[in-house]
Image (cartoon, rainbow, N blue to C red; front, top):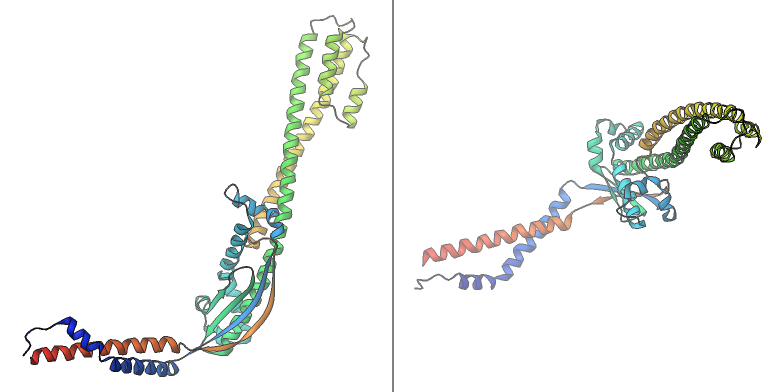
Length: 351
């Protein structure tokens, strides 16, 4: 009688009983396949849409430039950003709710379905811009087909609206930039006129010490003309003021009177510029509010996206027979191993 038990020897003997192991695995796999046909199956329906992205207008997208500077600026990042934006948008509650509302119009089944449940039935498969597959899974083939098709229609409708809003944001952004440029020019003009007014006051203070009834010194005269010429523009006010400049042999008093007229012109233009600044700020505020509204409606989409329907595929039954067969075979294999352990244990006890 052998008193010693060897795991290696017992394992060697068990492996030589491989036909029984294969038999157990095969029976388990067959039972798994049978169960897969008994187990309630589900149906998968697909709606295909086509998404195009114009790469040549990438860097005209102000939002893209604002988000990417200074990290990166290339088409690949732009493409990934837009596709990620689109994928995130199609699962939004508002998309699910609108899809559910459309489904309820034609089928009472959807009355008891929530947006969370609907979202659990839907899935999108894509690799890049191009053909996207919108998938719906349900125990009823008609409901699966309805969900996939309706979801696709809602996505196309909402994304097209979002793209139009994105195009509006681009135009509003251009208007905002134009307002900002005009505000800058206006502020620069105000600063120029303010500096000119201070220079005139300084010139007047210096000229007050000279005889008022004598012709003006050429140096003083050219200083006055140079100060007046800096802000002069082709406007009726400035044209009239420059035409009234005194003659070269005019007295100091005439030039002082003229400098006061120039100050009046400056004050009048400054008042008009201040009003213009207020108007521009109001316009900027209105445009900014409009931009915020339209940007929310754009869902962050690019104005360069094009989307259209392709086709809807009929629902197909989805059976996980291979998975059930693998699970059945694995369970049977485990049972075979446990059986061998029992046999070995009993034999050891007998010995």
